[in-house]
Length: 144
Image (cartoon, rainbow, N blue to C red; front, side, top):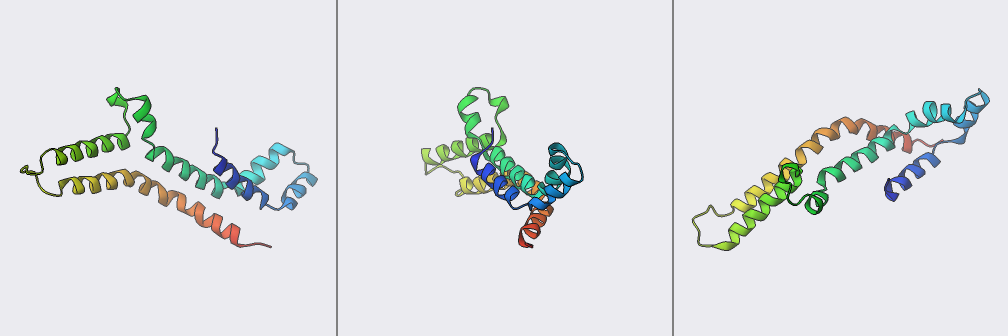
């Protein structure tokens, strides 16, 4: 259900949280669920945002699942697979007849446009997650 890489990242983050926070909450009468919800989850927003962004980028760039499992259902293809099919069609057209009257270098221009189109949604999400990265870097840098 979760990547081993993400589990290692979360484990290392949680081992960096001092035990004194949990012990002080237990002295005040907090149970394990209260410690998780009120102490560990608010402290773990940077690592959860990082894993969420990694997962979102992986799902956004993943066109192989649709390529394997939805080959005939073109209505359900993700944008990455549609761009891949467009680029494959352009390379096949470019290799058929080099003496054609087509615009030279049009395949490269289309490929660059497809890359920009594929990057725009992730670039729009990143500024919202950036504050958590700054918090995580600050939290990890201050040891005491």
